[in-house]
Image (cartoon, rainbow, N blue to C red):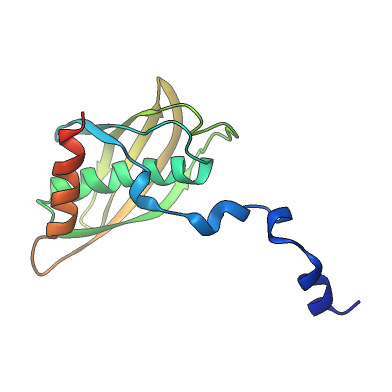
Length: 147
């Protein structure tokens, strides 16, 4: 059987991550409970697939970093380390504590804990923007009103 024939014989429903095509990062975080210079505490809703729960962890770190810089930086996930494999991550609502442990001119490291359990360390990169990002400022403010 040719590689093309084998590929077409696989049903999408049988493929790992088949639901990934419905990835909607806007539903990852449900609320920002608190945010100060060193930590953000955020919540998710129940029923997230694990990849959206992981997205919520990164979003919490990114929102904290953006806020620290008055939304005048673009934040992005640079790396994840020490990630604990939990196939049920996201099934129940999560309370995310992302604590800033180090920052440089190019990025920041966060220790991430959910419901009192260490989950990972995330390193976020950032680059300056010409003007503050109103989209992420408004998203942060909207999430703060849901706490």
